[in-house]
Image (cartoon, rainbow, N blue to C red; front, side, top):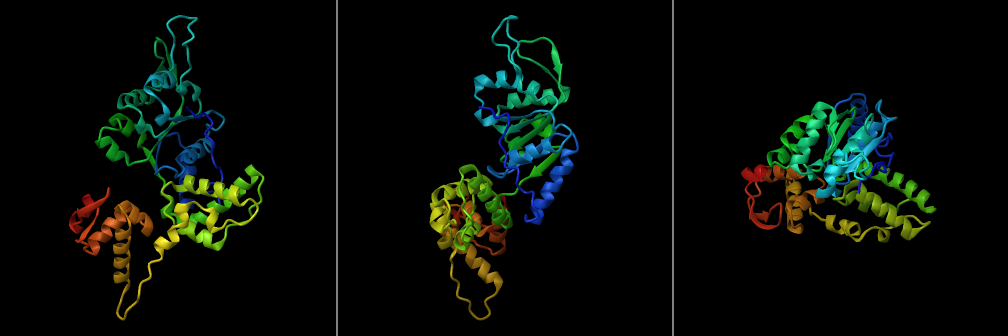
Length: 341
């Protein structure tokens, strides 16, 4: 249920082949690790939030202490109190005596993955522990001093979660001192070839295979696909491809079906006429993406841009005609309202 060692892919974002943005992010992680502040990591699922948390721990002066990873979404209501805050038991010989995760992380780092999955009341209790730097176990009377670095992650923007009462207000203020935003893979396509190379090396080593490379066609498909599951989805795709092709280069047919189909989806031939400019071409591409997708989020992924950027372009090109919404088909999109939707 709870991963105390948190298996990481240590080669993420560490080479000079990465994009400038990711090298800058790694530099920021290194500087943050040198401090002792609480850290909030925000990013979609599969973007490497657990890796970033572990990197902060490994590069800090707490690296000799324990790194305790708490999978908040996996904690059920009955185990929350016992796992997070421990239990002192009702008798000296009680079998219910249990060390809390905070105590296990004492002198090290505790990482709450998707902390918004915890009940707001539990978040409030954690915030109090962070403020007092001490813990009184459930059923206990004496408190234990804590020296723990707190790191947490969210898949959504904390401001929206706090406004919707999903994220406890005190918790929001406690952990928002330093925030790291991890971009989705579709916004850092320059990193895909390097990541594929790293995953090939790892998968070959783990499975005793000797897959030498990926074909240009398969690589182009990987560069074109939107990767909604981000780095984790890419890794799983390469792992499965290695198993299938064994000692041959990865070809198109070795990739997941959804990845194989992206090239056809993105082949939108446009006939260039005289006086046709880039403004017109981009507008046509957006219109075609909207016509082929069920939601604007999918259309943005197909175009390789963020949803906010797509909204801004809908405003710019004054696309007032019938279009799709965030959740499906059938709403009138008004340019002046796009930013608010």
